[in-house]
Length: 287
Ligand SMILES: Nc1nc2c(ncn2[C@@H]2O[C@H](COP(=O)(O)OP(=O)(O)O)[C@@H](O)[C@H]2O)c(=O)[nH]1
Ligand SMILES: [Mg+2]
Image 1: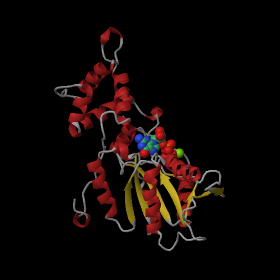
Image 2 (image 1 turned 90 degrees about the vertical axis):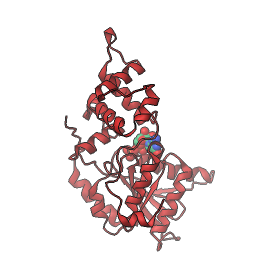
Image 3 (image 1 turned 60 degrees about the vertical axis):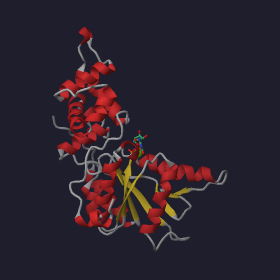
Image 4 (image 1 turned 180 degrees about the horizontal axis):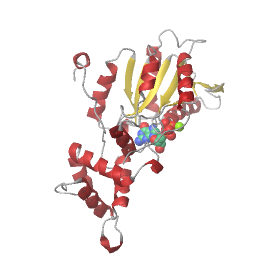
């Protein structure tokens, strides 16, 4: 099965993105920490040129910490790029982001010369959540007096940072089918574009290879079944996804499995790892 999912008007979106990048000091690219490559769009990297960029590895609460560490090393090997694992729902964690914005735009961040930042990312990575956390909490902090002013699509965070209030919407690369299946596994692709059974089988096969113990623990299996289909059946029995006659409803079982995986019920799981750590990155940041 080929997953296809293209929002319209890409040419226009691309023009707008180039225009936005010209007007800002720091790019905040929100990625899903579980699949930072598949949730990125290479066009942004091309348009970025020398503009400083923060790769925000969001939903870090769901990702495998060791793999996320490898991704940080991978991204920070590129000049002008910093990577920050975080959870956009946690206000305390956004402080680090503010610090990084200031660090990457040392000539700005003074009265009259705020750091102009903009959030980019594909659907569902947490752009709105991030903007709300950044804007909302700073408002709450100062009680009655509004801490933020909203004018002409910008939010003055009153900490030397001005943020665009509409995120730059990127689209995922659907030419890479493995990437598309990873996106579907994470929940980033709308349900209408995918077949739960196929995506569930993809996720089952990956989990059997990469995180067998998490599967055994969650579904009380002493041994893993010998195929992804058999695993989904076992999960279906465990979760009570049965059709008439007591046979497992494979579609429902796959859907239930994906729901659990996405919610972190099996544990913290990453869906991809960086291809290769560059020697420089490994040298400069020993573990
Ligand atoms: N677990 C977890 N979920 C998050 C996080 N940030 C956002 N989400 C969830 O991801 C979904 C998409 O978030 P949203 O902000 O609408 O993404 P957007 O499409 O990029 O604007 C929502 O269900 C959010 O609650 C996070 O850090 N951790
Ligand atoms: Mg949004």
